[in-house]
Image 1 (tube, one colour):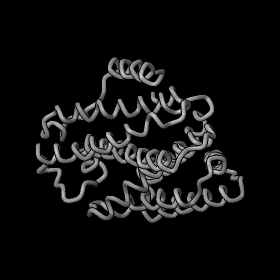
Image 2 (cartoon, one colour; image 1 turned 90 degrees about the vertical axis):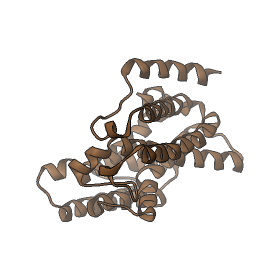
Image 3 (cartoon, helix red, strand yellow; image 1 turned 60 degrees about the vertical axis):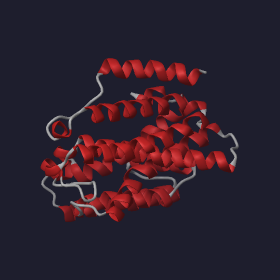
Length: 261
C-alpha cells in the first residue's frame, strides 16, 4: 500500500529491489522447499543468485530479468556488494540457524532488513539529486536502518508462533516462545518503538518522491506496534495481529496531509 504513494520516478526501481528480495526469500522459505529441495541445494541456488547479481551489477546485464532489473537499479543508485553481500549472508543464515545469539541476531537484522532500507534510500536520493549536508545524510542513513530494523522486528513478534511451528525458528535472542510473557513483549516493543522514533526524525529530510510512501509505511508499523502492545502476550502465540483496511485508509489519508505541508 505504501509503495503506491511513492513518486513515479522511484516506484519501479523500488519494485525492482523487492523483486530480488522476494526471489531470495522464495529460495529460503518458499518454492525451493515446496519442490522438495534440501538446504544444501537451496544454499547452492542462493549462492548462484548472489553471483549472478554481483556479475550483473558489474557488467550491467543478466539473462535473469529480475536480476537484470535489480542490477540496473543498483548501478543507477550507486550501490553494490557492500549492501548485497550482507543481504545474502542473512538469507544463508535462515538455512542453517534456528536460534540466534545477540551477535548473529544483529547481523541477521542488518543484512535482511537494514540494508534493504539503505538500498531504498539510495534510490530515493539518486532520483532526487539534491546535495545534502553530512549531518542530514547521517540522519537519513540512521533512519533507513532503524525503519528496516523496526519493520523486521515487528514481523518477528507478530509471527512468533508461526516461525517456530512452521519454520522451526526463533529469532529473538534468549527468548523461549513457549514462555513468552508480558515482560518479554514490552521489552521488545520498547526497542521497536525507539527505532521507529529514530526513523521518524529522518522522514522530513527525505525527498518529496519518497516522503509520503515512507511516512505511510512508518505509520502502518507504528499502528501495528500499538496493536501488539494492546494484545495480551498469550494471545500473540495464537493470533496474528493486523491493521484493518479502514485504519490503513485513514493512515494513508493522514500521510497525504502530513507530507503536503
